[in-house]
Length: 122
Image 1 (spheres, rainbow, N blue to C red):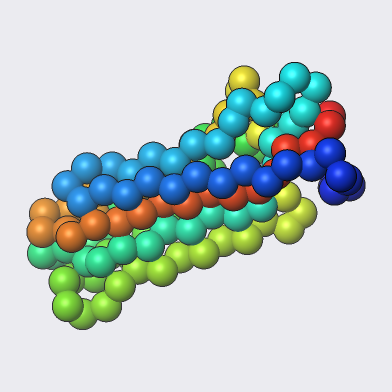
Image 2 (cartoon, rainbow, N blue to C red):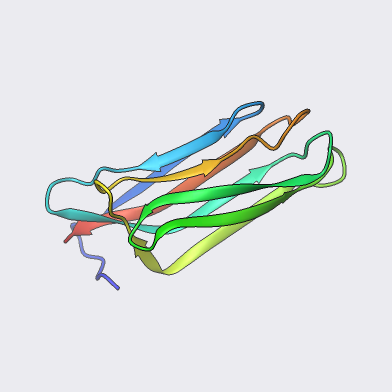
């Protein structure tokens, strides 16, 4: 795991959508630095019909990470998925990572994607 020093800089991004996907990205890091993902979250309301969607985190050293998210019917609950990464996950592919969350479906009033971490010297 990298040591966090005074040269580390926090990175964070969010995106929201209703009938469309939510895609939150961090990066690229400054020259000579690497981005480390400390966590992600996926939140939102339900949809007209219950189901599931598959969110993906692309750009990590481990390749694409997939997360199946259960989507309840409207009014019966909400989605709140928070995943911390310890140790943090390093980013590759041009030093950009993106959390892609598809629309929860017809009738969805919205969902959000958040990604956070830090950049530090490589």
